[in-house]
Image (tube, rainbow, N blue to C red; front, side, top):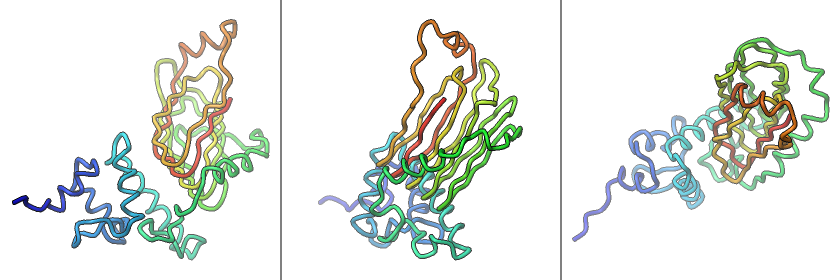
Length: 244
């Protein structure tokens, strides 16, 4: 006779290596996402099961879950002031902001935030940047030397970061953590920077719109000896665009 699988083992089947932590993050609100019913040892509803399956299909389910939990916390903070997300902040509900979204909304948000010239933004010289947008758009510029990275969160909004005046020393790298849910992020970089994008997209995308450098372009040599920008994080029903 086959023994029934334990609740932790059932979560492990979705790819989570730390089932204890996963159960806490997926459990009931306010500490969890409301996607996992501990008593039934099963997803709270079919939509929750689809989310768990998508997390399990990612390269790192534990990291994807932590990023999703971070997004939910940000939405709750925004709704605490009776903001536009107040009625649907928890991701575990059927009426969550992730329902029925599309990456086209995010693309439109990015384009609308870039209609104004980025030269109108006063550049900040802080080594790290932090941007947060919920139902709004945020534009920043950096002239940091050196630039060390930062974080960008866009929930149903858009963020634009102009790094053309910033500097990453040769042989070093700067890391920007990105969370975009039904939102868009646009990053403008110098042509000499190497850009790496280990971003995990879920019904979203990452697009590098820079033109390839020609062999005769002097920036080819500069890119080989220049700094490296790493963009990592989670894009859900949203988009990240890289420009020069």
